[in-house]
Length: 214
Image 1 (cartoon, rainbow, N blue to C red):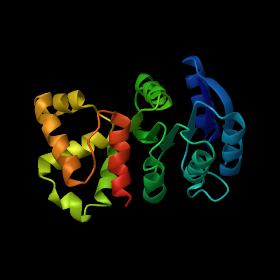
Image 2 (cartoon, rainbow, N blue to C red):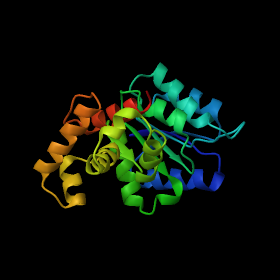
Image 3 (spheres, one colour):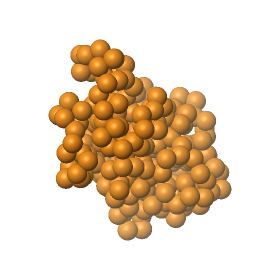
Image 4 (cartoon, rainbow, N blue to C red):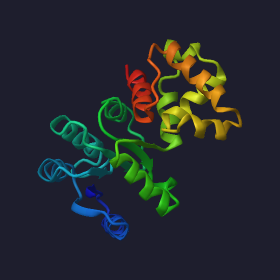
């Protein structure tokens, strides 16, 4: 699997290159700024893009904007954001795209190389990898949206776990209930939000976040 990596800090960038290479990934390009990221993504068309949010020249949202533009040019390009920050506006736009794998992890909450590599592989395969803290911030940012107020506390909790990319079985294990109960809750959530339920985990996450972006 080929990766284009964008990280402005030299040591972290080189560390990621070594870690990913050790796990069998090919690094097509490793860049340190937004313009070079976009150029590299369009040129190499990698299996997945691993990007930071804040890159030179302005250190605001160059990484996310480059990733979004790349997905416009390369529909379905898998993108995994690895950042210290949750940039809500562009994060929702990226996650609501509806095509290709997508993920958003926080650097200071990645504690295990195996899980990190698994997240990269999952996004590359078209799935999702969402840090719970990212999901929580996106949900809180839209807490006043009227349809969300229709959810029960348990449905709201299930929605958060769905948005993390968890399957019904995983949610059941997390909440200590049966999978049948979770299926009932998820069906109710999607009905109240006006969204058709789906067994495709990635589509479920994208549908939820696309709604939150409206």
